[in-house]
Length: 178
Image: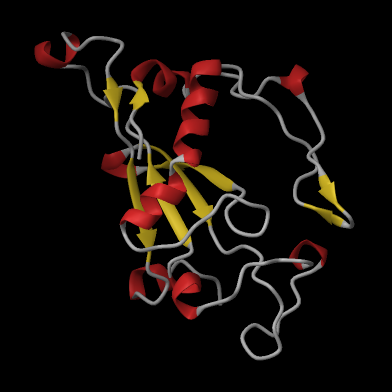
């Protein structure tokens, strides 16, 4: 995954994060509405860094043997969350294989209007590895910087960590609702 400039990571601590004046309606596809409204981020460096991060996912996934595409049927959204504990920071949880095509034999589940015309064939392997996790480096250390850390340039770049979560593993299964 691409590195993120420290300035973009610091912008995550800014308030407000969303530009309230940039509201626009997400396109709909027939009766399929993937999102009601979308906002730009207030910090353009952060927005560009997120865009580069998301655009890098198909290639990064392919490097570890996973198939992911950016489309309204596969990977099109994620959830920004805050991490707690000794490894504080933010992360993104993204879902690939969001709307596999309906197929009586392979995937006999109707997921609604957004599944209509999906070219994405269901596979157990794709479903098993569909949850993608990105841990963003902290914008600033949680403790006061050491002399060495204080000397770091403010324009440094830091790579986020990316993981594909195996949905069959006990630790992942514990996160799933009954």
